[in-house]
Image (cartoon, rainbow, N blue to C red; front, side, top):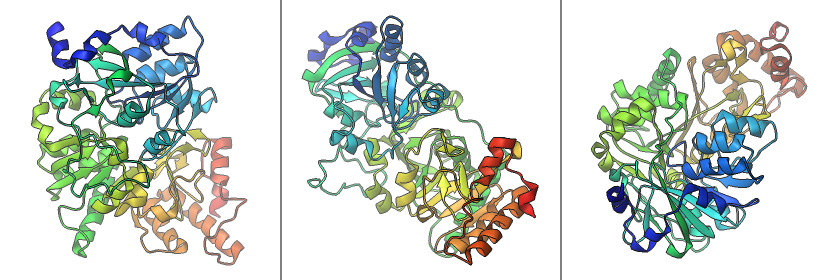
Length: 506
């Protein structure tokens, strides 16, 4: 252990600051604001949160927790269930904290992931009392080498009053050199971000530390919790084929080539499964510019389809993680991990002309998308980076199965119960039923494509009935709605456990 620690902790000034997790936890007081590393269960701090859980058994205290995105169980389950978290942002994906949010026990601030660094920079989030950051190493000249994510760690380190580092001796030495840490200057004073290619590097291999702000270093050997994504199924395979056929048509008319444009794929099982469809396709020399690299990206690298991938996080299932991290040197020249204000930066997304694929919970007949709220009130995970990408991408594509809960919920509805992405940011809808290309269409022109191509057959007649009634009732308004009936599907589901209503099909 001493030899490994010496290799990981190479800055002499910091060697005297190694402390126990319990001592570090003792510094956290009621009402503090914490900035923690971690993005999609990757690169998150673990031993200090577990020590805070133990501390909560003896002492009542609450803190605000801001991160890059979702964290593993140490924070988003155990710390949440211990009653320690007062406010959480900007994204989560664990049932433990989700239940606390939806019961009102935890306040949740859902936000575009590209915006968080600016909110910290402006002091809207904060002041941050402690940045608690996982590191794979600390270099001789005081660079903190992140582990499997970068997220908001650079801005937390820059702006926090004090820093606690979790030095993870179980993380790979080969992670050093994968990161590219570039932090923009203040708004109004910054230059354009000079990234013109997916593989460009702009900054340093680690996060510069103010050594005087480092209060303690805690040793960890806990690896990231595996991703919870589930394998592709028959319906996601069909969705992938629909997407590939759409892209083939784009090539036929000259808008794309077989190398496409850089691809972004959102967090979650459906987006991962759809991306995996490229593996057996004719598309090649692909690039990925995304916020997270899931299983499918590494499958595509292994298949020789993806040449380079840029993101802020790597989150893998246990099986794929064992294979990738067991042979990580194979991938290091094909990867870069950046701060999320760069991976999700609208300026770069628009410059590169991304093809963006994200997941919807529900879509309405005019193309508005709900990606966060179940029945309009219960938070699922959060908007994440989907808004960053959809609004600025060359192609903003949303994928969803046409139904849920065994067919009792239609994912295509008259009016979404919560709007995350307005019709103006949604170019293409893909379900297992087909594709609706909404580009250049007025609201009334989109209706037929969405109902006939994307809705489940059991709900199409009901959807057409709603639209025809709305069109007649309004006399043909620009976006016909009958407000008394627009959310009746959701009301029917709440009352009767299904959106199916034979009376609405007549």
